[in-house]
Image (cartoon, rainbow, N blue to C red; front, side, top):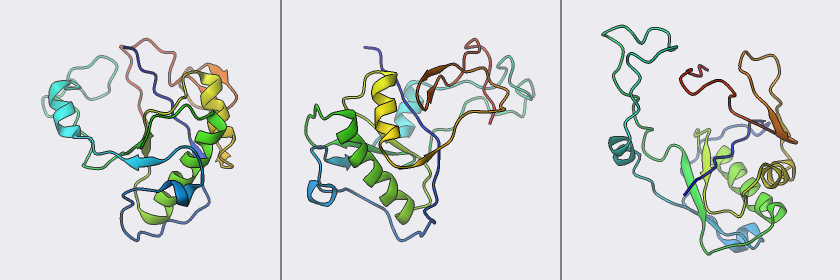
Length: 171
């Protein structure tokens, strides 16, 4: 089973107001066919099953040092937040955008967590993902002036990197 991970970058103008953690959103609060709920992922167990070795990695500056960490640390608990639809859905990308936007805004209002992962949405192509992000009403950022080589796949959708996999991507 091959899985594609889609991501987007946006410039959000909502101020962070840490007030607690969001646990779920109900369909009545969203008003859509998609009812996303927070799903716990044990990132530590995932990292133990699939450790990411970084010491000695070619093209990663400093990784030849014996003081460099051998493996990448797993994400901290509940980072990123993971949301899946409560029920199976075949909602359109535009309907998914309504639910995704609501979760993104709730998270920005209620936490300092800057990432969220959505799983189980009926978004299978770059065009589908483009329809989701362009219908969220956010100020999307394009990739301009960076050193990475990327290809445009659809409106607001680029590859993460077109470099060979042995190259490390640095922030």
